Length: 352
Image 1 (tube, rainbow, N blue to C red):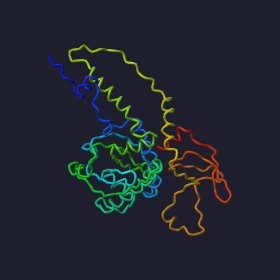
Image 2 (image 1 turned 135 degrees about the vertical axis):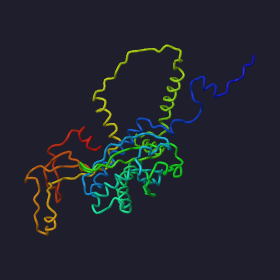
Image 3 (image 1 turned 45 degrees about the vertical axis):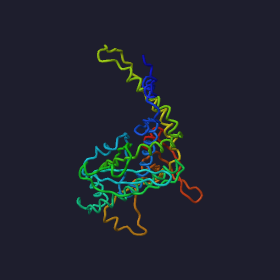
Image 4 (image 1 turned 120 degrees about the vertical axis):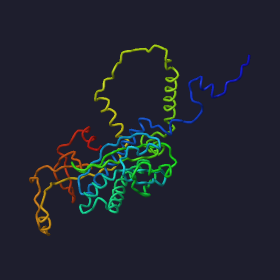
């Protein structure tokens, strides 16, 4: 009878473990806390960029909360409707990584028409010009926020852009060796009119690095949790009943999905982003005038607004009203005294 020694791999197999590989899931997996941290950073940064985009497009702009999903390289931008534009960018400095941004040609044509009413649908030069300005305007605050929170020098540069007629025309493997990406889909809306959907892709490792700083815990701190998830997954697989085994039927107990849990977790995510700058605007009033009236304006002309004298002024954060107040004078500067403001939960929802 032979009693051969078991190899380390066989021992690990018997114990339901996966060997000595370091964090095998880290390259293709984001923990929930990492997803929440990066999504919150992206949502607040894009909301901060909405004001600059509004000035560029001469419309009120809002950005939806991004939906984040981890995908293998071959599946990146698979949902993009061809033809679409692909914008290649890079983060440089103490944080380095590639970035892909995609938007359909139809959406770009709609944005260009708003940006320049004289443009034609086949004016590719105008479309590339607008995309370049839009990307630079959109990612300037994101880069600034990343650098500030991570206390590192971060710079974003646009490497190039092209139009893709079909998915087969975009061999992403030629641009990067990264195997796994985090793809965030969000929409840029112009008032109640046009909306453009963007797909933003970053390598998973870059997202992990950013999320680790936001949460105050480096990636190594997640190693134990990741191994626990793997261990539970392996044990579940090993303990699955065989095909001939009768299934065990149990009654289901549903959790109580009330609003208490949400209200408790919101401030924790917000604490990570307390130092992000937001644009505060006080609006005295608005009005509409015909083109001939605007052309007739000269020094000394008076433009009547839609608010009465003494009526409260609107206080806007990133072009969204969150409070009203009255105008005051502080030394030699104007100021505003808040008289009514939305609740904390409502203000948080306005920032998304």
